[in-house]
Amino acid sequence: MVRSFRRGAVAAVLALTLAPLAAACAAGNDAETYKIKNDSDAGSAGDVKVQNAFVLTDPTGPATVTARLFNNGSSAQNLQAVQVGGSATARLTGPKGGSTITVPAHSSLLLGGKGNPAAVLTTGGEDLRDGDVQNAVFTFSGTGPVKMQINVTPASSYFEPYGPGSLPTTAAPSPTDTATPTTTPSSTSTPTGTPSSTSTPTGTSTTTP
Image (cartoon, rainbow, N blue to C red; front, top):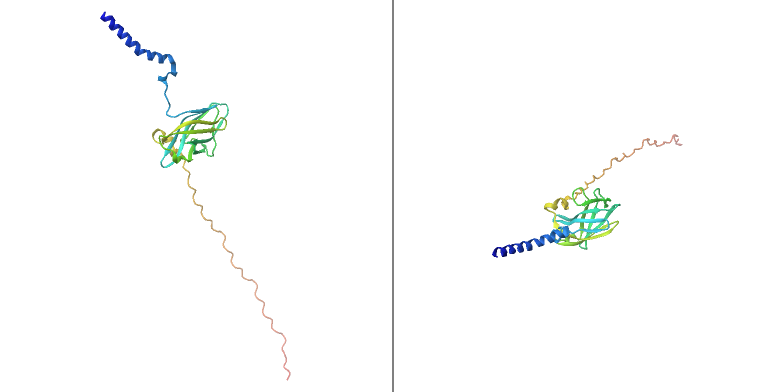
């Protein structure tokens, strides 16, 4: 009788332990136990998706924005603007200069990092603080705005290659030498002709007594 009671108790404990696991497995990959949140939010509009977006700060320079831009459509999309926190606006620079950043069709593009397009927060970035979560808007030519939340973090460790330190340095223009006149003033011309002699009277006056 005692043995039967013990066996029944052990079976009950095992059933209670395995029940949640069985329920999670039955729920599939969407079960709460399998949901893993990314460190950064993601946003999408139409065929465009923005992932892994961060504001990277550096005490020696302006903050920058890094993100992976996806274009699943059949036509190219131009990134037209990036705004963070309502007041911080980014200056966009393409990989070859200029302000055009194009995400080709059925492709992706990395914003930030050496040799990649850059988004530098030239205005309003001084109000950002490390650890903040700010509202951000990425505006594209075809789909319009992609709204999401974005983390503010220092450009160190893993993020260092994508921060302000990866921006190309602009060489200072060398001072232009002052042009010196190459022509020398012409010598003052001297008259070549000799002055004509003063004419003397040819006739001799005769004195009459």
